[in-house]
Image (cartoon, rainbow, N blue to C red):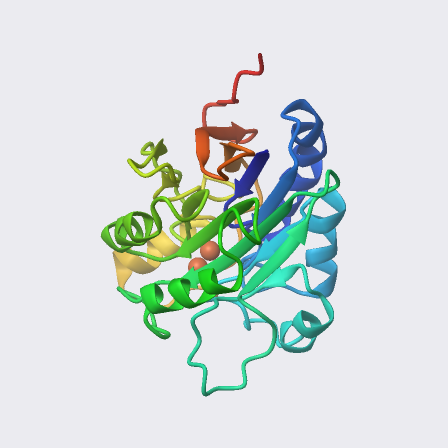
Length: 274
Ligand SMILES: [Fe+2]
Ligand SMILES: [Fe+2]
């Protein structure tokens, strides 16, 4: 299978870039399944039904959220109506959190893709233990039995914590891909047990910014220590950042992981098709 994961869509510029590039990428790269992180889609903070619709219309099969899941209060009810939208899995089980953190999808060619989003603990407001969370989620749909491919999004700040998650899942899932830092890392590779890994997929947003937000007020605030206007998304041309994961249909493990970067300011890189 050919699965793509795209990092956090930031604001209008990110949505426009996804709408512009994803339909073509889907056919050009022959994608069977597409996951897009949408936690910053609505004005940089959270998601609304209409911003989610833009991303689904562009060709996403699944949208994930993260620490910004509930920045727009509409998401609290929308998520219960939209099974393709995932929030972090590892909220404390004792709480009644809307929505779901994992979902089993069926592709057009009848293959089953299980997606899990896990929220990190380091340098961000922690939820429940990420490793216990992913272990519990994996019991729902083991690779090769219930799922033909499993993608874990590790939504986390700390690179080391993302590597811990990668190695913990190695051999049990198709890929562990990081999101949340908004910068694509150059460490995409296949771990020894056969799981594809990359610390961060990067964002779909304008890189002439501070991780997707307008740079001037943020730099001014840092330089002067005085308050400036509220953060808002940068509006220049956005780069669509993601990874393409090739999976083995027999084992469900990864055969390849390659970066995808199109548009905006970052140098373009696209997987070669044979
Ligand atoms: Fe984000
Ligand atoms: Fe995040």
